[in-house]
Structures are given as C-alpha cells and as structure tokens.
Length: 314
Image (cartoon, rainbow, N blue to C red; front, side, top):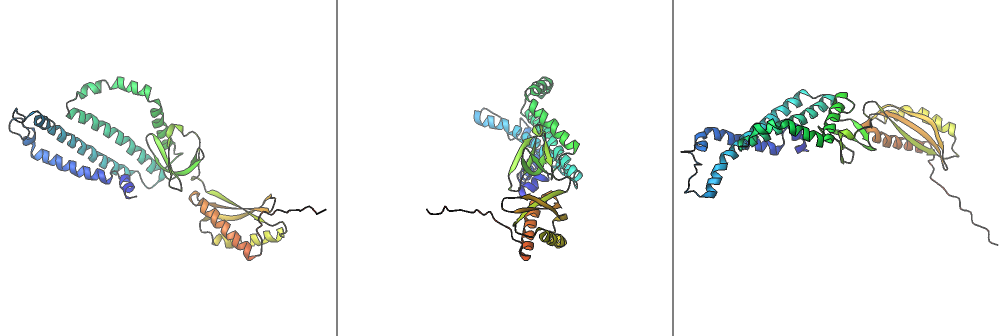
C-alpha cells in the first residue's frame, strides 16, 4: 500500500533513490568536468600502456555519466510533472481520471525523449532517426492499429465522463471499481482484491452503477399457514424501526408485497436504496433485521419439506 501511495504521487521509493543517486553524479560531473572529459590531462585518458580493456572502460565512462545526467533530468521532470498534475487534477472523480490519463501521456512522451537523448549521448545519429520518424510512424500506424484504437478509446472515455476513477461498473459480467484509466487499458479491482485489465477499445458496453442511487432487494419467505394480512401489518408498522437500525440505507426500507408463491413458502419482497458501494452490506443487514423482526413476532421462515408416503404392506 505504501508503494502504491508513493507511486500515485508521481515517484516510487526506488525512483526517488535513483533520483538522488543521479543527482549526486550530475553535480560531481559538473564539479570535476575537466577531469572527466579532458582528453589530455583527465582521469580517463586513453593510452597504449593501459591495455585494450582499460581503454575501452575509460572510453565509455563519460557516456555512462552522460546517461545518468539524462536519467536525472528525466526523473526530475516526471516528478515535477506528476506532482503538478496531481495538484491540479484532484477533489472530483472526473478531475482525478483526467489527471491519471494525463500522467500516462506525460510518462510516454518524457521517456521517449529520454531514449533519444541517451542515444545521442552514445554517439548515434539522432537527426537521421528523427528525419525518418515519418516513415517509422506510418509503419507503426499500420502495425499497431489496435494500440491506437485503445489510446483513442481511452481519451473518449475520459472526455465523455461515462467512466471515472472510483466508479463501480460491470464490464462483460465482471463487477469492480475503476482503479485507473490508462493510455491503453482500464484497470478494475473487485471486492476480493482481484484486478482485471481491459483494453480501452474492447469496452463497448458496460453498466455504471455509481452514478445513481442503487436499489438493494431482499426476498424472505414465510410459511403458508401464516396469517398474511397480520404479517404485512407487522412489517409495515416496523419499517420505521428497521430504518433506524440500517444506517447504510439512504431511502427505505420498503415492503413491496408478495413476490412469488414458492413450493414451500410465500416469498415477500423488500427493497432499500443505498450507495452502490454499500449494496451487498445493505442486503446482509436487511436480511438480519427482518429475521430478528420475524422471530420477535413468531413469524416462521419455512425450510423445504418433503412428504414421504410408504406403501401399505399386503
């Protein structure tokens, strides 16, 4: 949980340690600039006396230091950008959702720039790579159509506001809370802690159960020999007392009448309005209080019974 919290602020604990290490290396590289990069009197001057292996190590040390400098700048920019995004986009589910998507886009752009800068440090012709970016983009576009579709679908999901972080939704029969809407996929977590990842482009139809108040229903059976009008009178006169015992209920509970004439019982239907996050707990609490009410008033809840008839002996 701590790692997740730190990640949500823009930088993990490991990233913070690396940021400090790269910062120290960057500062020392500026302090000892001449000693590192001077080819005549520096620490890493190559000569025939050193041997091929030592000269090779000396030749790559400045590049390694340059790479650390680039990584320092990259992590610093990511930390600042994510901190600003988290500061600006907060307080409401919609703003938090936009902030998470913006963070994902920023990370992709910054790391792409980091890769180009590292290649430049190691002597690659970055200009030629950038010049060929148009052809490369066309090739990637043809070969990664599904990825582009995921990105576009994610942007529309956020902009339309139909799906936000914290919403309880059902996608393809799987119910969970929206944990993150990323640049490519959406993560859901259910009550058991299981996480499901769905590509944004595959989310065609879903049920958002958090936008409106939810309706929890409970069916309780009574015996056929019960006095139904009397039972209903007891229920209606005690609905107010049930409400006081159910703090998670926003509206209700209500008695809706006979739901079904079952094989062993008369099924009575009850309902209550609640937040979607309290849906299952309200059902459990309502079952409990109805059972206590019936027990106090000698209303029996039947169980399935079977009559067995034995043939008479001849």
